[in-house]
Length: 109
Image (cartoon, rainbow, N blue to C red; front, top):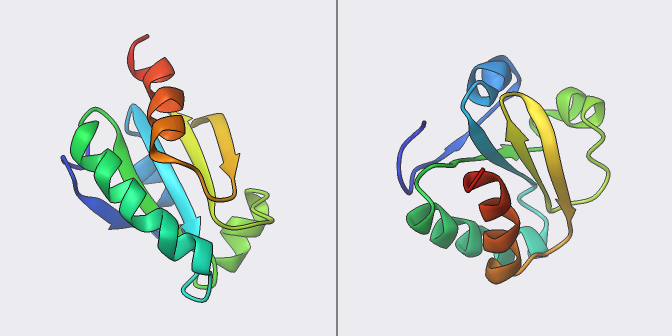
């Protein structure tokens, strides 16, 4: 676990280490993406509320090869991983309530 309300930047060298956490929500974003900027405070609020999930973000401009390898075609894209396995993918701007409900399906298992 990375820590409650802490959202870290992940990059290609740290990718596999971060995914070894039980539940990880990765926010794929870019600095020029307006919807990504709108999504960011929503992710921060969720990180404050859900302490059993690690929240990380990856700048696709700085990690082009890995984001392409992972099939990130649009941003923002949020991907929920459980022990390195992709469980769910959310493309586009997502509401806090929708994300909370989607994440809680895996938290409550």
